[in-house]
Amino acid sequence: MQMIWRDRLDAMNIRDTGKGYKRDGGDLKFLGQDYRKEHNLGKAREPRPWFSKSWYISTQVIKDVYARFVGDQFVGIMDSLGK
Image (cartoon, rainbow, N blue to C red):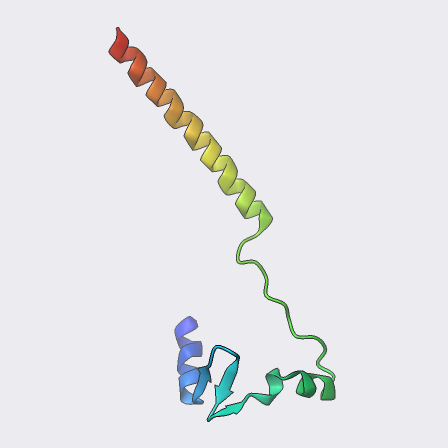
């Protein structure tokens, strides 16, 4: 899907300048605040975090379980070396 959008942007000669997207040297008007206000488009969307809180908590739980498992295995190995 990402490749499709890149191809479309290339076909329309739209480039990211670091300060926004431009086409043929000009600004894309539909991204501007004036255009949005004139056409009653409301406020532009805010960027969202790339992961959810529940996903982050799940990874932390898995990390803790794995750390406990590895720690138990290490203790078992060290205990068997001492005998």
